[in-house]
Length: 455
Image 1 (cartoon, rainbow, N blue to C red):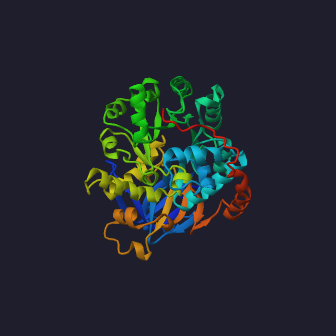
Image 2: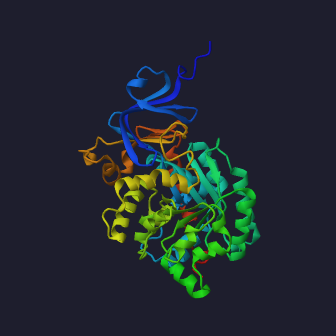
Image 3: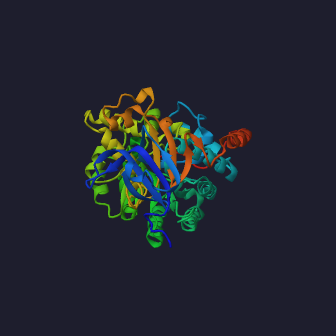
């Protein structure tokens, strides 16, 4: 006789933990002494520890003193740029791009990109990131790393108009070919770099291709106030209005940064017919001394999801989304002059459901509930810096650190257990990357893949 599903062994049972849950109004709550049952890469149930005490399972994780959260999503990064971590420091944006980063990027080989992606994935897994949205070059290599290491990713092959039609064509080819890859863990997007490096004709063609192939678009826009001011001065429109007039707001679009979004842009974004989202990476804005930050509160009032991000490690120096969560809350309090915004629970909402929605995966990620993909992290709150716990949400956002993540799970597969990575050999990656750095960092040729000129 074949056992019923309830009697058959689960693939994974996590027990004895506190689980972050969302109610019907998406309010954050916590269930103590709980258990999570996983089957086929999906959460089958969230129940009590007592209810699964005798439940057979292929794997069990007993997690007293730990909190189960949905895996974090890094909504905008350039994972391979960890190879450039620290090479361009204390510089204005234009010097950072033109004098260092773009000349170095012209040296990149596909192997350099793969090694950077391996190291980035190791860092993100250790920090509780289960999914990342990447916008870069040689993305076949990144897709290969994602497939092997077990993470989830939303990938786009970036292009500039200076590449001619071939850049846009390559972005489409990549997106169509890799969509649904890695057993469904890879989703894809078209990836024009930005309105100041991709002309209106290419942006309009991208919007047409997005509609034709049913693909979203991921790009930088209104990254900072200088870009918005320059666009207005030269063309009489803002970068967001460029997206509107080229049709990109009629398709699903993920906008990176948006610290230059102006008041006049808000109704434009609010009236977009496509799904619009913004990714915020506050550490980099502080580092570049940008005068404004992503207008999270104004976007929230429009119902536009704002996901958490790190940008690339060349600017941010880390891929720590946990830090982005805390900084987003703190920077918003400072810029709005209101200590009640963002609250810890609001910050957790951005880190979970809003980040999942930003990358188009809001129906399958972002909460721990039956039918959701089993992307789960376990966070250890037994350390002295997280005790005592008076407000669990505040402890998670403002006291806990990414290093408190003990276990990282994607699609029910354990990628890190008790801080030990199970799918990546970090020492081998670091060793090979170190051998390649002299050639990668050579700037004697003076070449750039692009010029940073905001219009």
